[in-house]
Length: 282
Ligand code: DGL
Image 1 (cartoon, protein in one colour):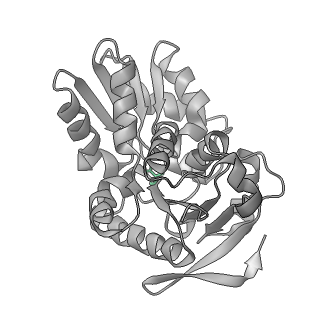
Image 2: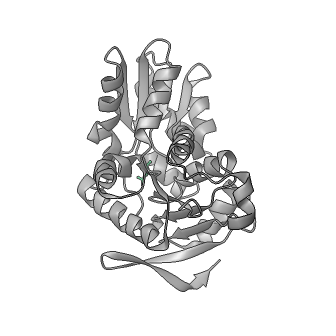
């Protein structure tokens, strides 16, 4: 079982922030990634629809074989984590628990801000998780729907982006938060801009980074981790799929993961299924 890759899913580019951490922290592991860019963003969709999509992405990865599933999408986690955890025979991890734990660890004044998609924020999942762990907290959560489009449309460096980010985060100006959870895996792509907008005194929590710490612990616990000695037997082979345009996805992924040779394959949505398009590979 330990020879299988770790499965990671997201609505698009966002989960690559989790993949990056996985490559850094778990260099002996292979990653099988599927980003559903054809249907991104998930944030404005009803949670029931997101749950259906997450199941489709999961079937795709399970067919290929994975030893663990990471829902590297906060919206997907809010919609489907519980169901997947209860159903699948492999460990399943979302990103909300790890992000919440890290926020509690870092706050000094117990005032925590959370930003996310409409789906994540309206689900109330972060507030519920944080308050269940510590009822003394003041949690201020706020949806910032524009941020995902900025990333998916490659506008991170555009001149108007800083002003849009600043404007959307002005909600927190009178909240006295000392910690802000990036409750969407797309947001670390905008981390520098967000930090500049909120100032240096607010600690940003990257839920994806925190999740990989937990992936490592869980793999060890279930004896699923590959050691450096296993490398000779299994090798490391990352596979990245998108339901969107593989060329665009490859450009973004190569840049973000700093790997000019990375290949991206096409997955196609056919009715209720996602299947591999074996003709296309970039
Ligand atoms: N990256 C995802 C999340 O963490 C989804 C963003 C979207 O597609 O709206 O919520």
